[in-house]
Structure formats: C-alpha cells, structure tokens
Length: 196
Length: 150
Image 1 (cartoon, rainbow over the protein chains, first blue to last red):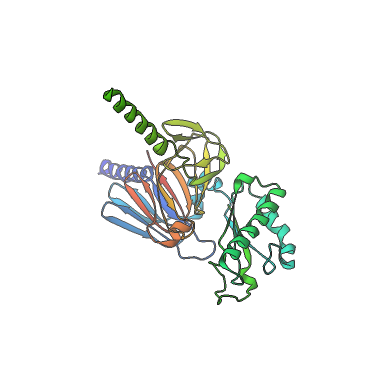
Image 2: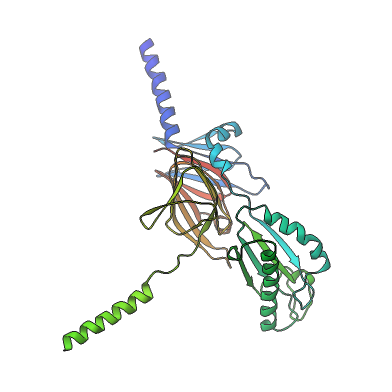
C-alpha cells in the first residue's frame, strides 16, 4: 500500500520533471497595454495564452496550461531576459517649408533625440524624409531625400558610424495628415528617425 | 575544331553563369546588440565567434555556451535574446520595410529564449512563429519567454 503510494508520488514527480525538461512557454505582461497572445500547438492540441503569466508546459500528452509568476520567470529566464536589447525608439523632427532646415521647435528637441540615440551601444538608425504636397513630385522626392541627408550628416557629426545609418526619402507619399495637392502642412514636413 | 569551340562556348557560359549566380551579399536580417560569455554563429558550415555589432544573415544559427547569452534586434524591431546552453536558428526571415509585411520563423532547439515581437507579427497573425522540438508557437504579440529541453 505504502509502496504503491511512493510509486505514485515518484511517477507524478517524474512526469513533472519530464514536463519541465521538455520546455515551457509563458506570456509576459504587456508594458503599453496592447493586445497580446501566443498560441501553443503540439500536433492537434492547442493552448492559447492571453493573460499575463499564462503558461503552457510541454508534456508527453501535449501542452498543459498553468499559471506562472514573475518569480518563476525571473528564476528560469534571468540570463535570457538580461540579454534583451534596448527597445527601438522613434522620433520625428520637423522642417521649414520647402527647405532642409529644422524648424525652431525641432532645433530645441534635437539634443534630446541625439542623446537618446547615444545610449544605444551599437545604434542602427533608419532615417526617412517626408514632405508636404506643395511642389512637384520630383521636387518633393529630392527635398525629402535632402532632409534625410541633413539628419544623417548631423548624426555622423555627433559620432554615429555612417555604415549604421540608412537614409531614404519618401517624398509626399506618406503624409501624417492627408491633404489635397498644393496644400502646405507643417506636420507632413518631417524626418522620422528610428533607432534600434 | 568544333569540339574545342563547343568547350570554349561551354566555358564561356559557365563563367557567365558563375558571374550571375555567384556570391551575392546576403541581406542583413538583424544585429547582435548584446553578447556575453561564449556565443558562436553557425554560418556556411563554419562556426564564427559572435561579437556585439555583428549582423545576422538568413539561415544563421546562434549557439551559447554554459556562461553565454546573446541579444539580437531584427530589422522589423523584434527582439530575441537567448540564455546559456541555447541553440536558436533563423529558419526564415522576409521583411518588406515599405509595407511592414513579412514572415519570420525561428526555432529554439534547446535552452531559453525571450521574445518581444515586432512589425511582422503586428501586420498579420501567424506571420511569426517560434518552434521548439515538438511545438509551434504562433505569435500574435508581443512578449513571452520559452524554453526547450534537449
């Protein structure tokens, strides 16, 4: 009787250890409240994780749902989480109509933008120039490119390696505020900078 | 005479083909941002040491040792980081920077991995998957951890 119980406990522990070795998945809380979910599929069996710390363990019988915790994740995934790169960030700088000069407002925020970029150990920067719909398409394509190049030159001047910057122009094709042709719109005269 | 002409012709077309199909610079899919301890990448049947700043190519396989960990940022802004004794392979990666559409499949053969999904997963559900031996994870977004025995 006793032997049977010991055997049963050993079997349960054995299964547990087995499950742990096979692996597990845990959904983490979303910092900005976005919808988040991961589906875990083994053969025909499927578990959907859509709550913070909802987990699934892989067992011989397929994925088994369970509730994990911050403590458990920190213990099992500490080194992996510590190696997570810095989150990508984006910034927008605005320009004077028809020119590749920063607006006065953008001149004031530019130091902060470059300081944020300087915090990345190996920054990979994408610079995309845009215009409003005043002027012809060829003029705006060229102007968008010039605006991107202005930002690129400023980044290089402040120490970002040229090979880590990609600068492109999109002309007036991707407005923030859609307008008719010929309309001046300050919010569309911009350069978007993504650093990752 | 005709035989040697034929051979010359064959040689010409072989060379031409070699020029067209020859080594093309592989597109970068991501960049190593963090590397601690022993980290290597298997590429073209070679094992190379991984350093911070290194750019990843399609079909790369990252391996970490007992004391190793590695963090990469993909071109779609996905973040993947692996702990010690891990093997992570980039099976498929396509990303159109204009439309934000793409496909990203990776496999954690063993070890531990943390994932923050990027633009590919945001555009269409199931455009991003992470496999472990026996399991497929469909990534709707956005942050999770996964381990694999082995």
